[in-house]
Length: 521
Image 1 (tube, rainbow, N blue to C red):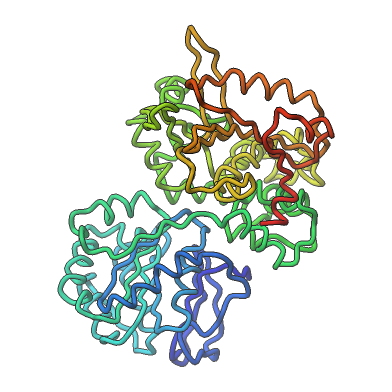
Image 2 (cartoon, rainbow, N blue to C red; image 1 turned 180 degrees about the vertical axis):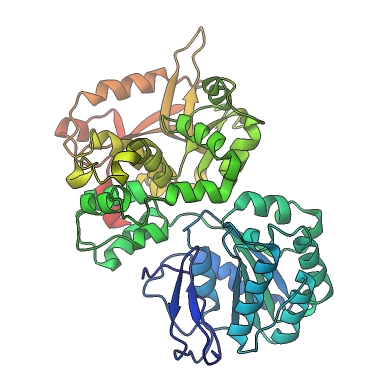
């Protein structure tokens, strides 16, 4: 069983009762004779990062009042695991909704809520005909002592019942908010549902103490994760794995440290029996249901590179039903797409135009390199992926690693020796062509308060980079149009080494070897 799982540890297990370890969508049953001395009594084998999130949760205890918390983030990001870590030395009740499969009804969701609650509290089975009854019963059992209560996958729990949110809001106002020791956490993978029904709902305005939107683990944390698992491959191999998995904890935990990066990628993404072979379909079904094809069409465009909203609209050719801005907003909320504002160098003012980027490494890899071969994969006939034989793997790594680095800006600042406090604006940058200037695209552009622009270029190759790239970089530097008095500096990030002529070139402000930078960080 993977260690990065949200664990529900049951207290006072009654005889003849089955307990469960509850993950995002998986269960592992344990025998009825297994008991635990206290809630949270079993620790995961590996938990890294999330220090800021744990600190913010811990501060709630000092408020001396009940707290309502929302935790959201993409599937497999480690939401339940974070809450488990926070609650491991506290009284803890975790109640999770059932996946919305065929045959699941409102009453079955309430029955599951009741069953989980009674098992954890060692009570005889009960049943609730309304959510109000269920919440009142929960109140009667938790008392006024300190306790963490988790409603996990809340969109599954209450999505079928129009009365759920109203009952929850009334219960919070009339009973739960008066319990000084209560931290109630609402958690879910469907961020669009949470945004619409809780965060943007007038019913919950002023009631939420804390909102956490979990992001992937940082580059440094991801590397540490793999090393602590025992993966001893080179930095190139580590980055190869991260270029496919991103910093998603559950994906990283599936890595077999005794296998090479190529073999791990093959077994996770191209092996017919892989645990991730249906992950892409599941993500889209859970999040977008009937509209999944429209969202997929947008992502398919972004697979080829960053685009403006207008460019996406033109490429869709009217195939999208609905408002494109709403679709993009939902993809950003889900954590799959990032929006990068453009700005005025002279004033620092944010421009209306944004670049949209497919920022989720796993989804990008799936769309670009796995989904086109799904039929062959399911037949066990796609062997090109084995042993790193995917066509153009260096090109694949380039695009994937660029996406990975752009989600790790603190790492980039540190590698460049730039103090974040002096950064005025930073983002990928697109200079649109006009009659007076040529267009160009900068992988990552940093503007400092001293009117210096740092043009960052990402070049990834297993082999040493030759001096021929200097002409390309010089041309890009000259093409970028800036106001008088501004300085332009070029920074090159690489992976496979560079020739001495590049290392010594006065054209480059910084030449950063990712292998060395990761060892330092």
